[in-house]
Amino acid sequence: MIRLNLVLLLAVVASAFYLVHTQYESRRLYAALDRSQAQSRKLEVEHEQLQVLKRAQATPARVQQLATRQLQMRPVTPGITQYVTVYEPQPAAVSPAPQER
Image (cartoon, rainbow, N blue to C red; front, side):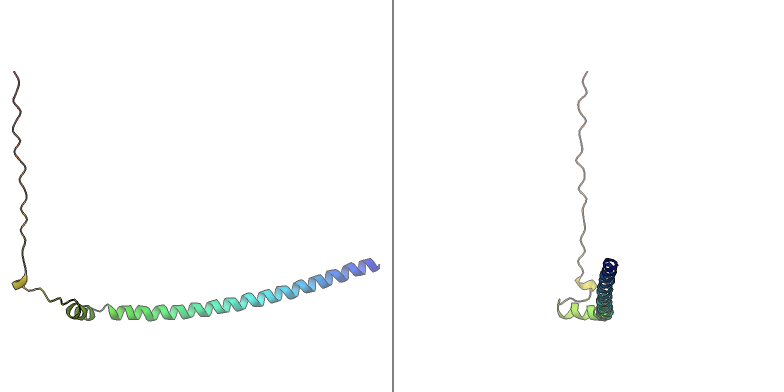
């Protein structure tokens, strides 16, 4: 009877340790999940801010301003337009081979 009681006591103690370990692991994983979700929200906000900044940088007025100021580009006018004419080379005439009799 004492052996049975000792086996049952060991089983209860082992299950208690397992329960404590499982609860600790659950809390640790929940905290990690919470941190990951907070970081995800932070990254989403940062992504939205970058998208807004990207749209602001790509406006036609800003592109025009940068092209004029930094690249010294100017609008096209007929006075400075150069037209290029492409001549197609004519294929060389092939003389017929002499016929044999």
